[in-house]
Amino acid sequence: MNPSSTQAIPSPSALPVLGHSHHFIGKSPVAVAMEMTKLFDGIFNLKFFGMDIILITGQKYAHAACSEGSFEKSIHLGLQELRAIGGDGLFTAYDHEANWRKAHNILLPGFSKKAMSKYLPIMHENAKGLCDRLARHSGSFVKADDEMARYTLETVAACGFGYSFEAFADEKSDAYHYLEAMNYCLTEGLRRMKMPGFLKALPLPSLLRFKRNTQKMFRYADDIITKRMADQSRSEELDFLNLMLNTLDKDTGEKLDKENIRYQLLTFLVAGHETTSSVLAFAIYFLLRHPEVLVKARAEVDRVWSDGVPSGVSMKEVLSFRYLQQIFRECLRLWPTAPSIAVQSPKGAVLCDRLYIKPNQVCILSLPNLHRDKSVWGENSDAFDPENFSAENMKNIPENAYMPFGQGARTCIGQHFAMTEAIVLLAMMLKRFDFEGKEDYQLEVSDNLTIKPENLWVRFKPRF
Image (spheres, rainbow, N blue to C red):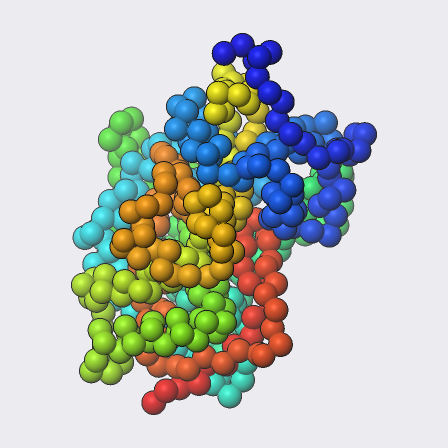
C-alpha cells in the first residue's frame, strides 16, 4: 500500500517544541496513557521534543502489530535509561545484539522442569522465612510491597545464584541496601526518561547519585560472581550463575563474557524480583477489596493443604492452586507490572489496512489499557474478576489481547518461575494469616518503570 493513501494516526493537540510532554508533569506515563485512551479508538500519536511515539491501546491494533511480521522489539526511553544497569541483558538488549540470543540459549535449561523441581524447596523455605517475619510483626501494619520484595529478591538470588541477602532479618541487611540503591535507580530512570537530552548530559547531583547507586549494584553483582568462581565445589549445581559461567552457546560455541554475566545477573535481580513482588502486592490489595474472592482462595488452599501448614511443597500442589492462578492472571490483566512493550518496524508497516507506521517508528503497547479493551473484556473491563481466567473463559481470549509477560521471541524467559514463586508465597500466607488492611486506603499506583500499589499497609494476623 502506498503510504500516501493511508490515514494519519490521530493525536491530541500539541505545544510547539514541547509537544505533549506537559501532560506528564507530576504524572506517570501509565496514568497519562489511561486518561488519553478514553479520547481515541485504540491508537494515538504523542510528541516529545520533536520525537513521535505511537501508543497502541486497542486489541485490533496490538494484534496487527504483533502478527504483521515486520515488527521487532524496540528499547523505549525507559529501557534505554535502565541499560545503565542492565546493559545488553535479556530485558534491555536490542534485537541485533548478539548476547541476547546467546544468553537466552544458555539460560533456557535453568527454567526446565528439572530446574523448577530444584527451586521449589527454596521457594517454600523462603515463603516460610517471610511468614515467620510477618508473624513476628503481626501486631503492626507493614508495607506490603516492601515485604513481598524481601521474598522475591531472596528467592531469585538463592535459586539463581546461591546467594542470600538475609532478607528476612529485622535489622538493615544486604537486602535493604540493595533495594535502596535499586529503587533510586528505577525512580531516577523514570525521571530521566521525561528529560530532554541536553539536561541528561549535565553533572546534576541526581545524576551523580544515580551513578553511585549503579556502582553499588555492580559491586553486589561482581561479589556474587567472584565468590562463585572461587568456589569450585558448587560448579556442578544447576542454577543461572553456573549456566552463565560454564555453558557454551549452542549456536556460537561461545560463553558469555563477565561483563554480560553481570548485566544478566542484575537483570534477574531487578526485573526478576520487582515485577513478581508487585503482582503479589496487587493480589493482596484485591483480596482485601474482594472478601468473597479471599474466602474462595483460602478454601482452595485449605483443601490442598488439609493437614495444616506444609513442611514442603510439590509441583503437583502448585498446579492444584488453579484459583490462585486465576487471581494472579487477573491482577496482571488490570495492572501488568511491566506495563508496556515497545516495538518498531525497520521498513515501515501498515496497520489494519489503513494506518501507516514509518520505518523505525517506536510503537508502545500500553498494557493496562490493552488489557481493559471493552471489545474483549466487556463493559466491566475495569472490574476485578478472576473468572476472566477460568478454563472456559480463557478459550475465548483473542490472540494478543493479553500479554503481561511480553510477546513473541522476547517473551519473558522467567514467567513460569515467577508464577510458581508467587503461588507458593500467596498460598502460604493464606494458610497462616488473616489479612487486615486500612479501611480508608485508596489504591495508589507507583510507576517506576514497573508498577505496584503504593502505601499499601497490611496487618497479617496468625490464624493458628
